[in-house]
Image (cartoon, rainbow, N blue to C red):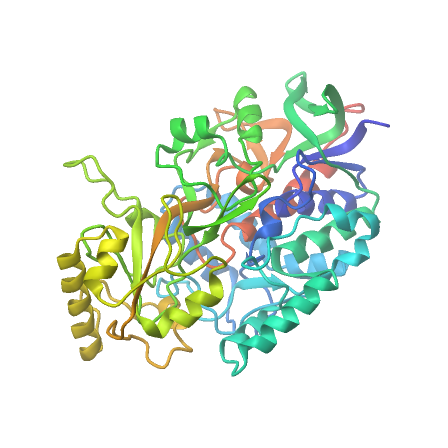
Length: 542
């Protein structure tokens, strides 16, 4: 087996396969090295949304580079090199058409889906978020068996963006569920798995070599330039040479407890990503002298544990969407602490708030509280039995009174009763004076199908469940420049070394601009990384 390529890509998620495809389109020979037995990384089990300003898929979207730049400038607080943001904005809008031209993928968006902070200057009320349409994994032939897929039921279903909107207003949700099941049985995948399937097909069609169960552990350098990697293959240390460049796109470090404790310093609940993101790229880039940033930051998401396993580890599900008109989040004292209509990432900070007077995190874990009107919907989501919660589980709990519910969940009964009464009073007046529910476009979008935007919690039985401050990835790592090249401590690019995705420090700093705020920059800068590496001078001729 030849082990020399123009470009070596470490990882096989969205950023990695985008890089591999871009390099192959430039005529480069490419090898993709994946440490697990499946292709797709975190992308394959994700919703597959990509925040891509400037695309042309939404007829309602009025967008341009200046508007996107203004929005990102507000969100990133001056922490990101403007040339990097400009490169992302320049490239992002063309990603759907580039992928469509080189793969069987097609794309669509949920018209009317706003940015997460659409009220900010430069934000938009319609969709900068693009989704892949469903993909028939049978097209991959024998490689279909190595395509990572989300666990079902409960995972991301094989549906198009337009079908999601239709399902929200369907009079017969069971028909939608049946259609999903039929697609699964036929090998049709959706969202993140669809994106990976299509990109993988495009790569294979162009001769990209894809190897699984090769854990890359170190970089090879000659004269200060990355010229390959060392990987562990069948228990042996093997060198893979890269004539033009190496792209690190192997995810973050959320599954390495030692790195997590040392760098993030928050309680670890178990990520919702596949259990293989253990900081391989971080270690290699640190040894190479890379500048590192935002190592204490994460992509946050409220999570629940429903007793499921994935790849030998407990599976954490997204546990709260803020889409219910009559549902609130409270802490152990029974008090609300956040606008529940915030997006999943921004709600993480309030959940992890640290109280220096008590040295506690009073809002973690927290509890979602609702009533009988939500019970059927919650039963449809949960895969385990009702009215049962274990020491390590977050199943829904049902009680005839709020006091009884509080006792079962470990919440102060008086505090919960007072808070629900306060909430109901506000609902009657049509206002959330405490936290401003329904004042944000995203909040209004998420409750658009509800009979009323704010609903009381008054109809027994009362329902609650524990919600944890989880993550689907870390957002810190080596810093990249506008060519997606990893830079050294003094800011100079490291020869032959590129990066994208959660393997590098987020180009959005600590912010989340809209749906697909991780995957959009991952595939965009991955495409930039692959193209940059392929166009670099060959080390044998330079």
